[in-house]
Image 1: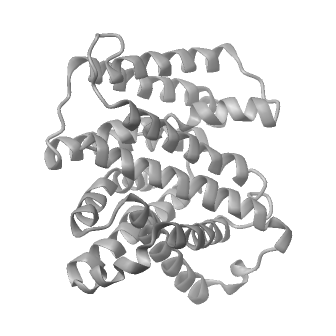
Image 2 (image 1 turned 180 degrees about the vertical axis):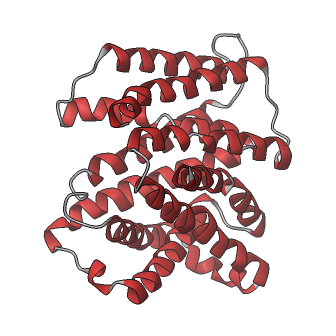
Image 3 (image 1 turned 45 degrees about the vertical axis):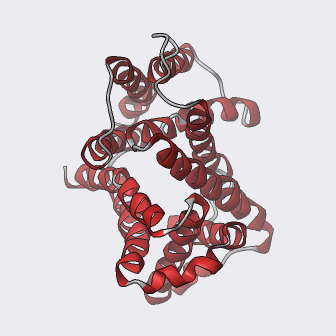
Length: 292
């Protein structure tokens, strides 16, 4: 039970990320600059942690750098930018978090293309439920426009970028410890996000103690700590069940959206959210059963 609790807490910490982003946006940082801050501070925290705990985990092979570019630039930078931008456009966190959780669907599709994994009837049904959910969330089935098209595309882009982590990470997990992969992923992401964002020109904004604390909090509370808790939880909880427990994130994001952003929830949007979450749970149900 304790290890399952670690995973639930990790999901909750991921779910509150929009609070940090909202404050940083108000302080003058745009979405890409928030990505730069998150990746830089996360990489620094992980570097200090590894230098103290186990320096051997800092060793990697040069030939594997392209895969870290995949997890860092094509996954972390892409999905964070799309996620943060969709939060800003929608003015809430529930729908962006939900769209981020379409990642398993993208993983399923890309795994079939690149790794020739079978697309079963179960996976097809999960895909249908997801598209139906998106129809309700966006208002396509009710004749209304629940969210802007650009926000929808960015939200799905975050799910696609998040899915790429699993695709590129597949080539790394057999070679390196999870901490090694995470550190170099964020280090490479920071190396790409800093020049792309122009955050250097805004570094003066971090002189305000509150802003600096929020930037560090974004990295520590919504990145490093949930990763460590999730990884610790995986030591005793099977992967399928862990992924189901982590779906607490969009529920927490919905609460954050309602409390902090006064996000409106129509019947259509609620039905769509339940369909998409149901698809995720259904897609992982077999994995949990097999592992237990």
